[in-house]
Image 1 (cartoon, rainbow over the protein chains, first blue to last red):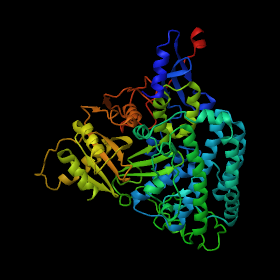
Image 2: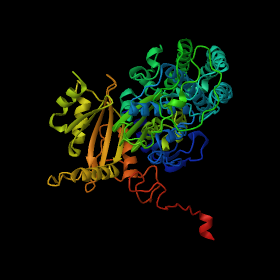
Image 3: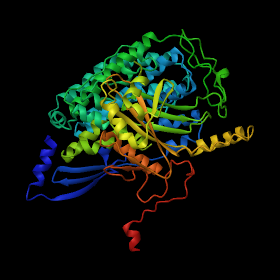
Image 4: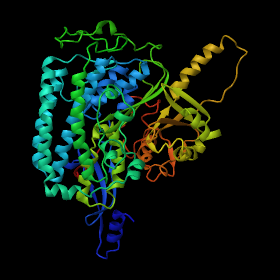
Length: 410
Length: 187
């Protein structure tokens, strides 16, 4: 009998017990969006927890069946709006597989670099809100200071902060500037010391330790059975990272480690993500050092037909703006270009495994697009994880699974 | 030994067809033998597909309408050749499997005809199937036998229709959800 089952048996045997229902959310500050939990409580113990989602359902899957592949791209920004570039990249990789094209090496490096930046941005928001929920307010302010720097760099890169749509099918939109690279270099030089600041604030905080250690334990078999991915799975000691086990873009060329937890509690998942910060910095540094010259978009890449802006100043070493103009091929009604059949391409986004499943009938629009979003599976697992826990620990669990509702509801 | 051969050995006669697209393998199994097949794939020592990534529904309505049109054009040339094939089933469900040990991926597909829209739930093997199956019930209207909590998830309770079906219009059928608050009722 697990500890949670014991607790449930304990309260149900109590003569004074009184069962009551509570609806937590959808407007609750700690549910990270519009998540509603239907709770059945006995005192402080959760007897059953049923998440209710769909408040943000925009029908992205249905919409994309009526849009071309390029047109659906901005929709993927709105999935996990904390790390939009990672979604874009996953989407582009899936369409590239369908088209049978490959991005040039420079674009691959750029994408990997930007994806890791968005991983840092997403994890910063996670540590900020997770600590805030549990009662460590100060970290929130510090983490947002660094997140702002990354968002400013995104703005420098492509003009948008939250929903950049920077990658393109077959490459990226535009090359990096010297100023951007300087800023990034400065950022990764000082970021590790900032991480130590957070750890000093949190790891010596007795309230934080009491509320995370031994809370929300997910054993490895249960984590696998529930379909958890990302740091939530690795916190339970399962070594699986798509960047390592099925590398895409420039991940096979860079050296990094995959942090693994031991006990699978909230604290271990926190440690995993903190370590991922450091690995991301490592990957970004290697990408900056190895960044090869060359074109940034494949010659046979399709794109929306749009006018080109005047060429920007680009870094020494690259060959300047790629022959993008010749690459603009209208593929909306071209039945030859896209492969028929179905593809599933998964990428490791900050939240876990994000997969795009396409069924193509050869037209320039997907016949069916399905998004395998990690948050959807994680919220589905939340009910099982929270059963028998205390009400206050639900908050710790939601935070440590790192869910975002935009991605869950699609 | 390559994956296709190992899957064939494991599933034996249950593997109706094995296809390869872009390096990934899709195996079609009979709907009635779904749970057994997935269990065999999970337990087989050479495969160990122990992780269920997702369950996906597909509506083939437009796909075979188009093929029908194509077929007619082709039939006109040799008019004597008129073979009446059974209509292909309208729905398909795809199970995305992953082996954490070898990081191989496999897609298992079953076909669901429109006149028998009930499929065995695989929640007894993986709890992860619970929400994706609810989503398919919600958006396609396929029932899962043995599912612990089969209710609408993304759409609200009482919504009529299944939005991801191909005969459901993009702009909806004019459904509105009017929230009646207690105060309004009193007036």
